[in-house]
Length: 314
Image (tube, rainbow, N blue to C red):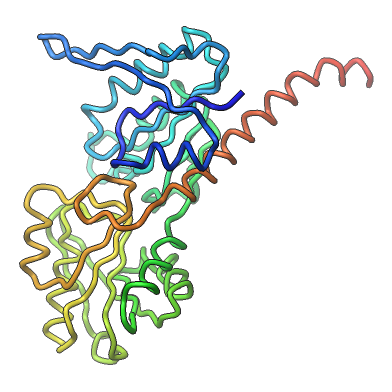
């Protein structure tokens, strides 16, 4: 039987594209809030004996978390075979250590919560820094797909003579891959962050930047300070207004307006997070991550089912 996908929260059109890529049915559910602000949720499509995919991108996660947890629990209580989470953007990855006494290491707490609630997790380009993989954090099959191919293809098709710029060393791991797909050269800058909104970028490498259209690539645009400072540096070094290509377009507060005022030429983001700049579809890599996660669960279930027989034959 086909998997059954429920769209709790995603960019417009992503649920249908993802369902098509997975050959999944799209289920209906009802949601509202009681007068006291508590969540009400009902599956209008029966979930019994079905493999359930909950699609919920987790930007601004706190308000989304309760309905997600209730949906997962309700699906299991109503007889679903399995319940997995497709989270194009995965929240609570930044606080990956205790920087100051008394701080909560929320990445670990959030991972424990989700690992106890769903059977598998699939996401796109999570903010891995001190964790080598999601498996080092999550106790369930957790698969990270990547939008590198989609971003690189979009840049190659839409930007004249692109020159890929990574704003910091963290971006190096995928800047080179994007440049390869786009058929472009690349350079990585150095960044120092002293707070959530305090960023300093060393622009020395821009003195030798090949002429063309600069394309600043980044995984997350939250405060957008990194992008804003890089745009200003490029202008100061005499380069044309750059394109910014980002995976997760969070753009908190007035950050998007500030970026446009800084002199950016164009901003293109993936539909991992809904935003007016969405230009790149991530349904293909997300679907592939889901397939791997589901296959891992099925393989483990088959091994568990065979183990008593195998032990008898030893």
